[in-house]
Amino acid sequence: MRTTDLPEIRKLDLFSSMNENSFSNLMNAAYLQTFPAEMQLIAEGDTADFLFVVVEGCVELHANANGREATMAMVRPIGTFILAAVLKDAVYLMSARTGAKSRVLMIPAQNVREAFANDDAFARAIVQELANCYRGVVKDHKDHKLRTAVERLANRLLKYHADQGETGEVQLPYDKRTLASLLGMTPENLSRAFGTLKPYGVVVDGARVTLTDLDGLSGLAKPNPLIDERKA
Amino acid sequence: MRTTDLPEIRKLDLFSSMNENSFSNLMNAAYLQTFPAEMQLIAEGDTADFLFVVVEGCVELHANANGREATMAMVRPIGTFILAAVLKDAVYLMSARTGAKSRVLMIPAQNVREAFANDDAFARAIVQELANCYRGVVKDHKDHKLRTAVERLANRLLKYHADQGETGEVQLPYDKRTLASLLGMTPENLSRAFGTLKPYGVVVDGARVTLTDLDGLSGLAKPNPLIDERKA
DNA sequence: CCTGGAACTTGATCTAGATCAAGCGCTCTC
DNA sequence: GAGAGCGCTTGATCTAGATCAAGTTCCAGG
Figure 1 (cartoon, rainbow over the protein chains, first blue to last red):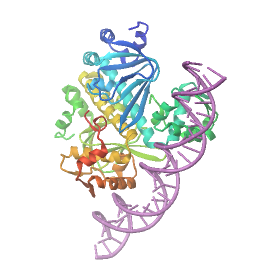
Figure 2: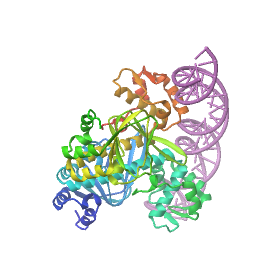
Figure 3: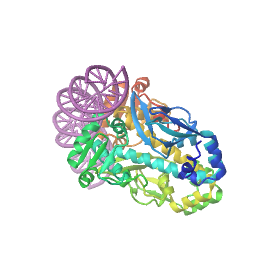
Figure 4: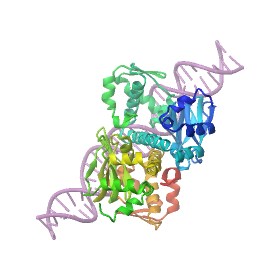
């Protein structure tokens, strides 16, 4: 455990309110590991042995069935994943692989459950974290059930734009293959969707996208805080 | 509050471990109401004033955007809904309406949050409930991203079959319009999907469906515990 | 009984998106 | 600097599912 990371992790909502003793117990049991890109961390169906915290890099959560694969979510620093499986002592529902070289904190599930049982503040922080995760997936699900592929892309661009400081320019955070899967379409279709958005001022140059007509794009996207707002 | 309902509610995982005092405080503040079918209980975007428990009947959770509507889930006795919004003191992400005449327990959000703050056992029970809800939505989301409409229907039939005691006969719990929306398709398409399943031994007669070739149907459906198993 | 309407089915057509198949333009290696 | 290979685009076709438009069945109310 690199001591410079500790304060960062301690500051997470999930850990900030727990008592010092529980926290240091957790951290003493934990491993901080660096993984290369495209490294499989867990597979769906495995029993939940660790809670993961992405400290640096990024991790892709994906799922497989019937020979198909879908990206379910991307986790960026500093974020946790598969908390629910750890608490229920159940199997993972999603697989995880690094999307880039990443530093990941691995906390043994047993220790997490002990801290949950002994530290009331931690138990309450977990509720808030789980409630956020739950609402996040509900929003994703609404996004897919209520919008077309082009609408999903338009809203995603607007979200990245807001995240990156409203400069009129957006840097796509993942390669287009991954972005396509995350948005629930094929790479070919993502290309075509970008084409469809051209009349709305969307100019693509590799991973850099320029938005020249935000009003027009918003008119098409019809962003909805009950789907797009991460904190709501 | 009808006293005969109290033991039933107390037995729910969510309430069974909380201390007697917190529980009676909650119940004293709560209203048990009977609503007719098709009654709108809450609308997405409203602030979360109550936690709901369906005691009898059934409640449909749905969402709207861009002029489209989708059924997100059905809640049957005894189940709760919109716990996450109540705990976060946030707005509802989904609307709710009764699917039939229903008795519903409404617990003021403020009281739920107080009990959460004061009763450690309740806080921990909430974690388990939220983790279950979270994993439920993840499974729904996987169902939609990884399966075709016919596969979703086939798996749904197998699930109802298992729930109803493996008798070779299944009673559809909702009308076909609602079932179609829940499965993410139009009513017309649900009819056609039933037609597609005829060669797999699926015989439809109104709301009663007979399954004469379970192996064949399973071969097509490829049920997956990481999507279909409710408790996993 | 008749009648109106809702729930569902069936058929015809349309469309979003997938799939298949080249092709282009990088970067990386040699 | 040539070639291999990957990421991406573009075009042609195909398919799942939506939409539109009649029917049919069945039940409720007069």
